[in-house]
Image (cartoon, rainbow, N blue to C red; front, side, top):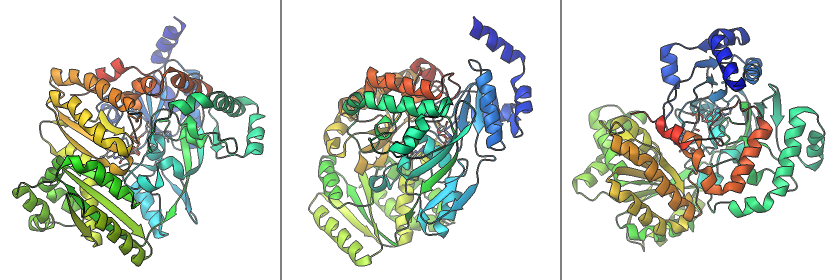
Length: 553
Ligand SMILES: Cc1cc2nc3c(=O)[nH]c(=O)nc-3n(C[C@H](O)[C@H](O)[C@H](O)COP(=O)(O)OP(=O)(O)OC[C@H]3O[C@@H](n4cnc5c(N)ncnc54)[C@H](O)[C@@H]3O)c2cc1C
């Protein structure tokens, strides 16, 4: 009753007008803006009431104070590039756009960079490369996403086989928490942790309560940990406290804006390797999959990516678009660049799977030996092999893999690329048993789908092409999701290696980790955000019914 009255009061008080009094940045509720912000790259559509672009951190604090005052009615959902595939940055209340003003690079130092979350990764990389430094966890969406979104999702990419996910490269964060104050969060030793715990107010409480939670739940957490090398599901309680270092950044990374809003990131960067070589493996007989994966992993490449025959054909068809991205214009030049794909297509010998195995290093002799050793072992398997050495050729191969989802989204008329089982991960050595069982689940639905991803991590992006205007296909979504995730959980895998939970997967967290770990996630949320003002309905308190109701046709 009280909640209802408060909601009516806030509606009466004209949210847009009130917010304009609170912040200096833009406050927009025109139809075009609301339409734009009602979608990300997921299946879902949720219309916000208003979109605010805070001018600075002071604006952000004012917003949080406002949301706290009107808790129960309004909430804040941060949004950066809006390329999330889970509905993470969607909200029916206030969307906080981080890209308009909070987008500056503060400094690039020797092996590190300090940057605001709204900076697009493509601009960030230009600056780090000037110093021959790289953030190696960039996702395939590197041209359209921001560094803040990469932290929000704990994104990964083609180099994650070697370097892991974005969280591994976050050395400190500034974040506005639910008391509207900005805090610096970084790894602490025991003494620094005790000092934090002695503080009054929200900050002290968070350190005390999260440490206690980690210590009393160590057993429960250990038993529920999936056996995978990549995982973005839930809150990463596993890496917060090892008894020596207490690192709250691990909890904030990948939390999708549900615990606070990040205002600054300090990244660790790696030196760019001077040289690269690629082996392209064409696999025609899926039964050789395990042998190929094991053989490649024994040679420790920097990356090990895969895409399927559907992606191959799509790349051939869209050769003009891809060629343009490589700076090559004109139809004839595009055909020439993609002549191999054309000839393969015409000869009807398109490989079922194509693997890109990349080795990098500063010493060309060591690199040559590594490639030669891998080549020699792979030659004994029923595959075709190509050794790619020219940078231009390697860029082309990488682009086909990176653009697989974008091409599907934009270039298949009459069908929609439907990401809902898009990021499943199982241990790489179990793929040969897992993939046929997955196929058994999908076959009765007669879906065409593409498969691409990170073979070395057993992380596959499976994207069906569907007509979501067809009621039967819409109804199949929850059914397929239930069955596929159930299979993934039986393999002790993760339903998301890197794309995170959002509206799509949060409802399955209890099933993935069990009710005890899910209860810990609820506790974490309560400790950080007792009034539930940050991105509600993600991670905890999610509803599958709500999600499926918001699929757009
Ligand atoms: C074609 C395509 C390819 C993709 N490939 C990959 C891939 O290879 N690997 C991968 O990991 N993902 C991939 N994605 C998903 C997505 O692009 C990435 O996860 C990306 O890092 C999201 O960045 P963004 O700036 O778009 O974030 P957004 O979509 O704006 O936000 C992502 C999440 O972070 C939260 N958030 C944003 N800013 C903040 C902040 N300042 N503080 C707290 N929380 C915040 C949001 O609320 C949201 O929940 C792909 C998407 C597309 C469309």
